[in-house]
Each structure stands twice: as structure tokens, then as C-alpha cells.
Length: 344
Image 1 (cartoon, rainbow, N blue to C red):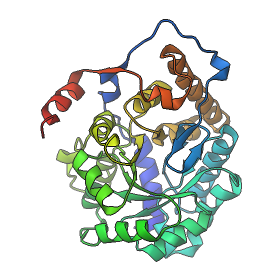
Image 2: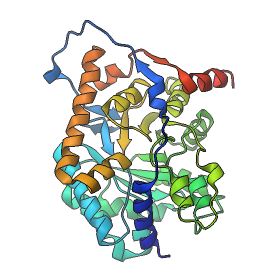
Image 3: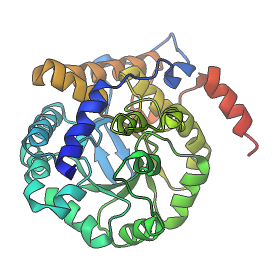
Image 4: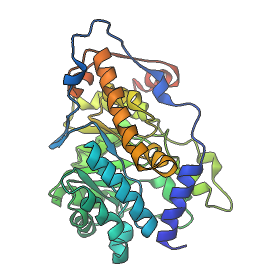
């Protein structure tokens, strides 16, 4: 199967597989404050992700590209919606275009449709610095995501099996790149040990990419004759990854992105309360675009913005940075995890 065909396969299976019934964001309650003193129309959604200034805490996270005209049309619509809504956007892995220049238009369309917006480039951890710079230049990116997806690669029939150069590549790119470098998980979450290891390599931007959204174990297992179904529930749920990162945020100069299983603006606000500077959404937005069209996608993003502002009103938070400091309660499986990891 060609890389282009595999990209289309991923989209089909990502839209088709069943989501987990249990979402760990339901384990998180933000503490309600009855006496708000704010004006809804004067709340500020802008936030800083390190040196990046974002007009909104939500961005379209990495999804696709490199699958010919179909992925070009998807990225065109996503980029147009991001521009209209004032949110950032990440493209899917650009390794396809780095290896085959014919696939470049499916990524370049993002910058054409959103010439002034915040756009993230994306490569795998197998990429060297020269390839990473090609990805950045291709879309004039404001930042670069390096995705790490060990389990997906192991389940993928044609996936990588040798990761010995991964840390060297990440460190080299981080040292040489002139834009912020974000290391991103793809649905398996980051532990506090991983976050500390990345920080020691020089990485200060991390997208925890936790379990709960698009399940790439299931996606790849749907492509196998004999699946590794025992790994379909592997990984750290997003809220738990954010809780794992939270104890390090005060100690280290790190900037955290929450993604994976965020269903709505309330989940996004919970991610912020747990310490994220911003949050990414991917599969749920793609589903709206594919099933309901462009106008409904823009409407959905606007609705998410309203939901975030409602949480800000209900917690007396004038800004996203104030929401990050509000109290919350953890229960259920997440509380059990938190208790057992406290002394590890």
C-alpha cells in the first residue's frame, strides 16, 4: 500500500472506529463560583504558549495531508475554518511530502488559506534536522510538532521498528530550529518521566496527546489481518497526563498542550484548569466537517468558544491564565491513578 493510500485509510478508520464509552474528563469537576463579577462580552480568550501568542486556546490539531486531492480538500476546509474562527492549526505528518514533492500541495494549501494565522508543521521522530526544516519552510510554520507514536508504529503493518535515533533527532532539531519545537504524543499520553526526559533534551513545549480520542491502536488494528487487539486500551488518558505534568510545570520552564478526547469547550476548559496553556481538537472537528459540512464546522468552533467563556464566567475568570489557577476536584479512575502515582 502506498503512503498516500495509507493516509486515506487512516481517515476512513479514524472516522469509523468506536470511541471509548468512559472519558476521563468526566472524572474532573471545576469548582463552581456563584458570585461572578464579570461581563461575558469582555472575557479574553487569548493565551500564550511560550513565545507564541494565540487569540484562542483551541487549535485544530494534526490530522492529515499527503493523501492526494482528498486530503488537500480536507486541509483547505480546516484551514479556512481556522482563519475564519481565529484559531491555530497543525497539519498532519509532512513526511509524505518530504519524500514525494507531488504531495506538497495538500499541506501548502493550509498557509494559502490562512496566510496570517498560527500554523504548526509536523514530522515524525525519524526526521532529521534538514527534513524538519523542509517541513517548516513548506508552510512557513510558526512552530514544529514532532510526533512520537511508538505503539502505532509497532501495530502498523508497514511501521517503524527501530527508534534508536529518535532522541538524537529530537535534540538536534530542537537545538537548531528557529521556531518553537513541540513534541506531541498521538493518543497514548505522556508520563511525568517522559516530560522530564524531554525537558532534559531541551524541549519546553509538549502536547501530551492522551488516550480518549482517535485510537490509533484500533485504527492500525483495523488494517491488520491478525490484530494486536490487546493493546487497544493502552496509554495514559489526557486528564491524567495533564495531572502528571502539573507537578512539573511549577518546577520547570515548560509549556503544556492538552489534546486527546476533548469533546467540547467544557472538556477544553478542564484541560486548562489542569494546567494546559491551550488544547487541540482533531477527530471530533473532522467528523463535523465530513458529516455536516464547512458551515457547521465554523459554527461548532464558535460554540466551543462560547462554552469556554461560560466556564470562565462560572469560575470568575477574566482570562485563560486565571482559569488555569482555579480549583478542581478529581474522582473516579483518575483519582485512583493520582493517588498511586503520588509517591512514585
